[in-house]
Image (cartoon, rainbow, N blue to C red):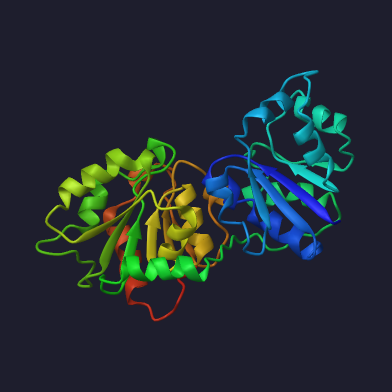
Length: 324
């Protein structure tokens, strides 16, 4: 294979869960030109860092013609798709309209992957590698890895320069309120008289914030207005990955948690009601906390504090994977 195109939309976590499949592709064809058609701000974490040489925006207007039956297809895009020896698509295409339009362009080698993850069908990353295995490529490593550049790591150094070690980063949001630990629990976990303290240890605190997390972070900002908290707001994902790489991270079932795990952060993930066996990163630097009720609100502050205190006190770079 000389030219391979991977079409992958979805949110941050969906894309990062696809990295093991991309890694297997790269290992199978180390000299191939691999390109990603996806959301540019997300696919940036894979571009020019071992996975792919280029990315193209899935939000390009003329591409919409490929989702219409019997549409006149733009010649530029028809030639673009036809230039690839292999196309792997994870797009939702129940009526196979997009697939048929690709074949009208002369695309012969097309493999379709799951657009949606199915419960009780294996880990999400495993499900996303199945189209790769159809090509005869065995995928044994389901861990997620992101490789920040020197420039991105320099940004992280400057961003964190004035903070004392150790540094704890938290992300109080996710794609659903049901997956969010109550804000009063976050406040109880960190708020003490005078300064932040976890079992006598006083880490610096970084709060990760995107547009969807604005209500949570504004609430925490008001609660912690007298403490020294650094807010990382709307950072480009590659820069945020470089920041998280240097932290102990606490978060939920979210794309930012996958970003932190893939960057190598020491992660403590609070899960519920989603199934951690399906959705949690498989990396060894991840520890999952959950309750049998699968209600995230049932996770006690004391339980999270004990795990975080142990992480702050460890001399190891990582903490044990997958504990409930």
